[in-house]
Length: 176
Image 1 (cartoon, rainbow, N blue to C red):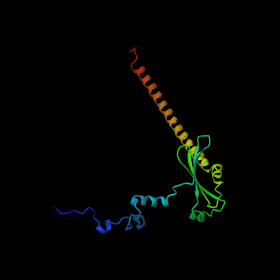
Image 2: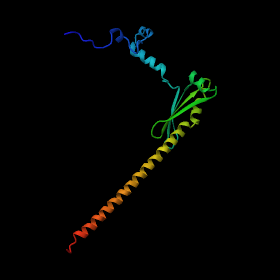
Image 3: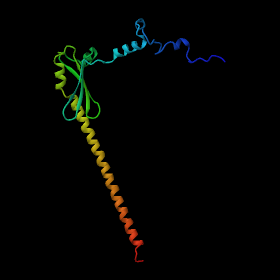
Image 4: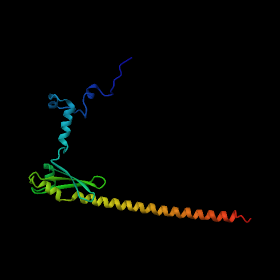
């Protein structure tokens, strides 16, 4: 019995992955914590990860907004031309009566004012209310359509019952 290769690729190719780029870097291999920790460190370098400020704000009418704040990256500052006392906020609907707003603060924005600024602005609330209102209108429309169909079905059943009663009385009367 001959040995069957486990991979159709040449052995030197199977030693490499990710189009020839090694999974670990030389600097990672020097450390003792292994390649899994090295991959985790590299992944954390590209993710926003630690928000310097995060809290949930309840507006009293059932709308809950998660607010996250972070320093805007130099790329974001340049692209959107954020001034030293400006903030860029993105909001998204995050489920039933919930939203999330991320505030990108210019790095020179006063850190003492950031939480108050986030609490005072209602971007996420507005998004949640608008989407919730839209969804409620759609749901009301669907329920009205179901009620109309049920009403038609009820009329059809009543008409069929009436026709059956007339047929029975006409054909099976006891006087015959």
